[in-house]
Image 1 (cartoon, rainbow, N blue to C red):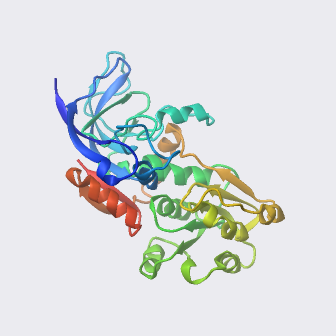
Image 2 (cartoon, rainbow, N blue to C red):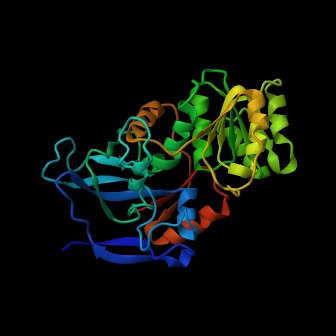
Image 3 (cartoon, helix red, strand yellow):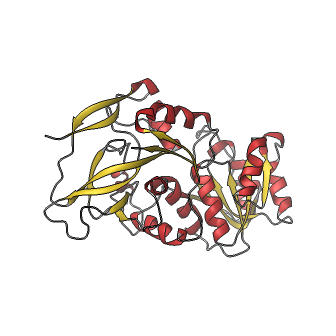
Length: 338
């Protein structure tokens, strides 16, 4: 029986619970493919899985992380649409192929509900994998399934954004940087926030039209409204959660939308709905997206922009990669190369 190296998280609570092991390679079923993983990227959600508590903590002894890209090395007996040697990226939620969201599909979320991709080989349903265009590397592709698709969903669901629409993105993590790039490619005006002097120029270099330093301005919602001539923003890609949501509502244009993604702040805070009522605004919860969204994002990216990768770690440096993610010093994505 062929062996492989794989990381497992014994239980949530500490990064020391993450260990590298030797295991048998997965055995694929008739409708599955075996993928040799070449690159994995990390998300804020992965830290929630490592440190808990529930409901973020994963099942015991899970293979963590959700975002991987690699090469098909074997196909099940019923597989005909893909073949060994093809380069693929694996969706965050392989059970959601297309169509409207069904909460039942979260039972297929990699690295949380089921084993993830921080391993040399993984088995996955053949219908879920997405073929990679020639111009994208494994490292770039691995950044897309969670952060890229989440940003895509945040900007493409609900009211249509048009050239000239105002979009607010918070911070410089993976989702926020993807949202900046996608919104600029759509022709939108992008306002970014940061708490770091060093990141102001970085965000501007990535295309942000305005950058607001929120750590030095407690009323940054009003400041953003002023930057838009008093009208406000048409879309907020909200990754902070309860801590920043009141400011995001203050920045919203009439009938604007907040795409609610993050839970970086206490999600149990009580927030008044009155500011949202005054603008007839909408808060839309975002839960990543489908395989079809991943396909659409890849098609949209073609020639428009490349994913921003902050740092690449080796497979034996996975714990260091997680620790670096926890510092929040990165801009864009952190990748582990196998």
